[in-house]
Image 1 (cartoon, rainbow, N blue to C red):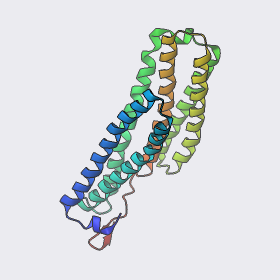
Image 2: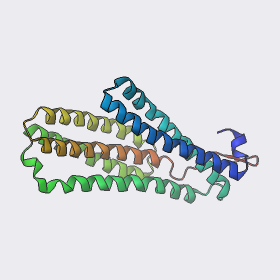
Image 3: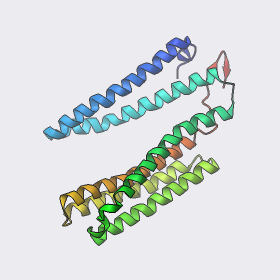
Image 4: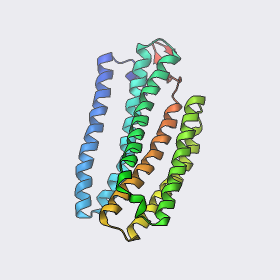
Amino acid sequence: MATDTISAPPGRRLDEIDEQVIRLFARVHSGLAAATAAFLDCDRDTARALVAEDQLIDSLQASIEELVQRRLAQLLPLGDPDVWRLVSILLIVPELERSGDLVEHIALRTPQGLARVITGRARGLIEEMSRIGVELWRLAADAYADHDLDAAERLRTLDDELDDLHVDLSAELAQASMSNAVAIEMGLVARFYERLGDHAVNVTKRVRDLGHPPAVAVQGATI
């Protein structure tokens, strides 16, 4: 981050944060419209461009978080580790809440008896996805408790395995003999497991920030 941004008046710095947040909103709502049009028109080129543009959204998110952290560094006591731990926890807890929702979504489909009508291979794939998902979340909890800054890379490898199983299960559901309603519901279940892995990785990325404020130049000093 350029020092002229850090030394700018508070109002201007907040304006810059708001501007980037508005850009993020714009990319999401315009991207949704474009994705729908591409999907309905089978426009593969536009779809590929939209997939690539997700990296821009990720970059905007990182930029906004950095600006907010740097502004906080100017407002809060220098080097107070409790402040940054609390900020990081506020970013971690939503990942946990969303993951709890995904677990609920899986449980809500139990009364439908889906497991009784899917193939044995599909059942086995679900069991394996669950095993890896449980391991991911166990490791994520350990990373948080131990302040393990390197856990994200290890979890990403496991998450890749979960993604591969998601692809395998989707293929199995596509070729199996079952009603459309069951196939749709099982497709959602598979997606829920896959997203649980993503959230576990995101949590461990946030663990890196626990108690580690960014270095910020403030009135000639470095935080």
